[in-house]
Image (cartoon, rainbow, N blue to C red):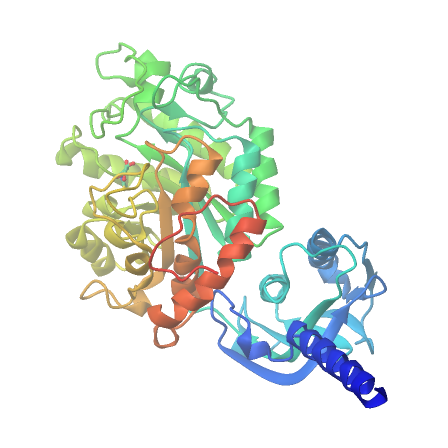
Length: 510
Ligand code: TNX
């Protein structure tokens, strides 16, 4: 009888131990990180986050430490303390700016997880921020109350393949408010993307307040595709977006598309039209029918004012001038127009970015060409010494449908299933354009068919993490069959983040 009881006790204890050990992560290399880090080694132990865990930071990293505390608090429901220090503590979490580590560059980091201490070291706050995103992926998005938060120990060394890793949001075809843009920014930050390109004007709407030309938003901001009332950002709201992005290592690139895609401006001010008559507001989805009047002086006064106000509000180095699909602007007018507008941008202390068509003009120094469709244009840009942002429509357009059953989106460049979006290399896609010509990658979301944040989420997830990995991880480290298993594990993260994502049949979701 006694031995039987003993056996039962032993068996129960054994079961208990098995279930405990399966819950305690000990192998850091088993974590499904996206983007894939350069190297991960495991040391077989665990670190536990408790209410008493203190985040120590150097003075310059107070804001980054505050971000980490806020994110951990969201997961745990705890209120972790952040303390300033200049030497490594014995336990807790320590953020350290160890300047001069060449391997890590501007954005790389080393993340060391020991039994009692987590150390993040990087050359810049941006590197620490990226390390934090890696660390957060070792944890659930939301923990049950009282659940101990354990992290497998080990060392991660990591740095990006490309300096420019971005996404675009078209807020012109349909308008999205400040909170939606902030949520989009959070998505990018989670996957270590560092650029948000805002397409601020198009035929259907003008979305940024310009104090010297107020009718742009009063009239031009009042519509969108379909029957909705549009909207715009006041300069204060735009600055709020810029600051929110900055705190997440994300640069905002504002785009004013010209000379085409300008009907909203042409409807707001009669004098911008060649015939002096204001055009009608437009709520359809055609492209290529509008143009600023390239030989009127007032056009350049207008552009100078817009670029000046936008440059003052934008701390990042770039202004995007669009330049795409100007089908009703003759090439003989388009070229001098782009030449002159580039000089305006430079005169306000900014660098030029434009869609690949701008390479038909004479590019200024430090101009960047955004490849979306035309290899010939892009090659012309490279020949002029321009750098390239890779946004090939057939691979990287977030508004392309997944397949023929997708409810939203377009398919003029093809269907982009999750594997198609992931399996390409920016440095070998276009013959003659190689890594040294490429600044990085950007995935644009055009919004003719996308009307609210749920629809944004459906188009963006699960493709966005793939673009983030293309930008961050070296091509030899990327492999669809392995990636899809890591992506599958992120399904429950998307779910916990309240993201309404496309459950691609190609991914073995858990
Ligand atoms: C092409 S890509 C455009 C946009 C459209 C998009 C729709 C580019 C520079 N121009 O105006 O919204 O296709 O996919």
